[in-house]
Every structure is written in structure tokens, then in C-alpha cells.
Image (cartoon, rainbow, N blue to C red):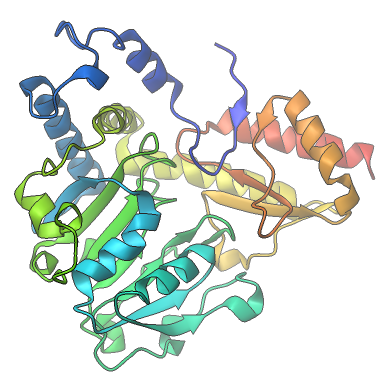
Length: 363
């Protein structure tokens, strides 16, 4: 099937194999007589789906045994409230602001605790990262929050900060929504990681939380039961009805990732895609990417035309070449190519070919 290439930032492109498998099982999952959307979340059929999904994801991400893996709802945006409800104890939490999403996290946490901005790159237009040695951490923060990949501004931590090396024993919280499962995670440096599924893991509706066991029983009294990490963990993510179909699709994505060679295999593909696209932009006289090279995202590549009067023509031409969803976020403008796991190398090659052709036409 010859499908267009979808560069959407999320909900994003899905592996075609996964979509075909889900279509084949839509009316009858493995001879059960039911589609997955029709199953009880407490039935043995869905129990098998959920258990396999969790086991495959734990294996893929190499999640240690002393972390719980939770399937929740609300997306990454809801976790901006759920995390301080669970971890802050109403005290001070530190935030490193590297773009729109970490900025939103700090603003939301202020409702439940003191949100201290330990560092911000706002004065650069969020085109770089503040070195951890320059962070101004609180004396005893309940946790330290970063967004390890900023979807809008295209900034990524390629190495997670080591809080212990900074003399801080607080847990590191990472919002890894937009690059989860694209690269390995150093769990020795992480207390909690969360992310919406709709970029690399599956469809919207599912939120992944990976939380260290010793952080499970710290929730504020006002924390809703369905958002209490300990309650969710004690009930194997079945305290309330989970997003069953999203979990099922994510489980198919996890198996697809294993067929790509796991995280090591998909990371190699992601490096090749990002290098190809950034090189084309850097070699151009028409396009530019403002992010410093040492922290450019492999997943989200914002770029701008030096003559922005050509923006609409560029997008129209892209659509005619079956290159979709390239318009940048409304808060920053320009263009953005999100090249998540499911976007194949051929899609980036097609985009690079179009970039060169459009520039030749408008030199």
C-alpha cells in the first residue's frame, strides 16, 4: 500500500504492519468472538493482552524490577498535575525549563506545591540546554523535573543529568513523551518517567508511567484514587477501566519494535534519519534550524524558511508530494518534521528530495 508520509507531531504515524494487524483482528481477536474494544478489562482475553504488553515494554526499555510500569490515562499534560500530587508532599519541586512542555509542567505543579525554576533557556528562545552545573537547585527539592525531549522547540537531552553528581539526592522526573522507546534510558538516574503514547508507543488515550518502588506511597491526601500511583500499581493498572484498545495497539507496536531489533535497532534507524535531515537543512541557503547542534532532537526537527513568504507554497508543494503535517507549531511558526520510530527512512529521503527541489525552484 502506497501511503503518504505523515510528519505529524502527535498523534503521529503508526507502523503500517501494526495497522494491518489491528484491522485483521477488528471483529474477532484470536478466535474469541470479540473485538478488543468489546472486551471486559477484567476478562482473561484482555488480561493476556495487558500482561504481554507490559512484559514486552519492560523488556524493550530494560526497566529494572524495582520500578513499577503503569498504564494510565490523561496524557502527559495530566501527569503535570498527577506527578506533584504523588511526589511533592506539598513542598518544593525543581523544574528545568527547556521549552513549552517543561514550562507547562512548572506552571501546573504550582497548584500543588512550590514550583522552583532551577534553570531556564527562555532567553535563547529555547534553542539550547542549560548545563546541569549551572542549575540553581533548591536545598531539598521533593524532585527535579525535566522534559527530556521538547516536541515544539526540538531540543533533546542526549545524556540524562546525574543529580547525584550535583550533590542532590532528589529523584529525577522525566517527561519522555516524545522520545520514549527511541533510545535507551539510564534508569540509574531516573526516579520516575512519564509519557503520552501518541508519538512513539501507540494511539492517544494511553499514558505510560515508570516509577521507582520507593516513590509509590507519597501522595497528597487530595490526590484522586485513580491517579494515586500506589493504588494504580497495587491494582496492576486495573483500578479503573484502562484505555483498553490503546493498550492493545501499543502492545502490537512493542512487538513491532522487537522485530526492528529492539531499542538498539530503532535507535540506529533514528540516528540515520535525523542525520540525513539535519544535513540537508544545514547545507541549504533557504532553510535553517536554530537549535544548537549538541542538543538537537532526533524526533522533532523544527526548521524555518529564510523567506517566510514562501511558507504556504512550501506546504502546498509538500502535500502534492504526499508529505503531510509539516506546518510548525502555532506558537513558533515555521515548519516541523516529526520523524518518530514509525516514520521510515524512505519518508525522510522523500522530504530531503522535496527540500532540494523546492529550493532549486525558488533560488
